Length: 380
Image (cartoon, rainbow, N blue to C red; front, side, top):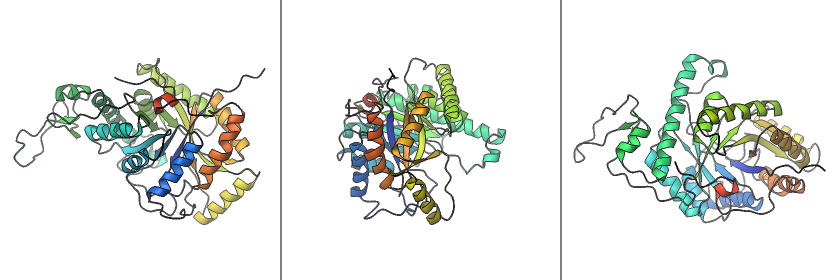
């Protein structure tokens, strides 16, 4: 008898008009609450684990939408308009203050009753060409960026645990904090950081604590393409999403992350490895490829992506998901090429196909996002 596959986890990444730059602007106000509510409720209708909300600092929205909303504020607006699905906004780490992030995401966790997450994103100071990506001149500052990110996550987790003593926070990330202004009534002047040279955060005397989060720690998600972010995710995140283009590449990536997870002392913890996929779906064979050609034409050339582009019927894409699952992938963050069409195809066609194969839930089985993903409540 054939053993049924383990249940997959599915998330969806919402960005602009969709991930294909040839996608047309949706009807109505694409920046209004009705638009975002409809998308996330559709994802919830499909019993997806969570949605991520994009908020990169230097890239315009995909397709015709040139402006971006603040992802944390959109997430807060969606909190009371949804019931089960996780909501994971992006907060870029480049200029992040740990206290601000801790309070915002814990507040979202309260507003959603335990369905919040934080997509951490590290952005280089300038775009990096592929031919220079692995040079020492690029790898050294990138390594520092991810060290800083890991320190920031460590401090945020401590703030979620109620740590308020400034000395304890400094000890978690030596050199990252400047001391409080010794003359709070005077004008602010730059102060050299204590214990190091980075000095890229400023902490305050008696910082206002983040509210307690129903999940203990809200979910931490990151997207990773190469070894440095693989190690960061294995060390700091609950879900690491990667961008393989074959089952063999997926297996090698999972193995690398598991080794890094063990090296970070987290071998006994569950760290999900998802794969990002751009999806174009149609129930009729060949129709999805035809639609991709039309989107390419509207864009003015072939669309390429860091992630694999899955084009086909729900059955064909389900075959791919289950093949990569056998390579060690436990879930997927799907990027709909065009909204709302490809999102609806995921929820109304791909999900039923996976359910028929015993590979996806038929009802929400937990009240929190960590619960949906089989993660225990987390504290440091």
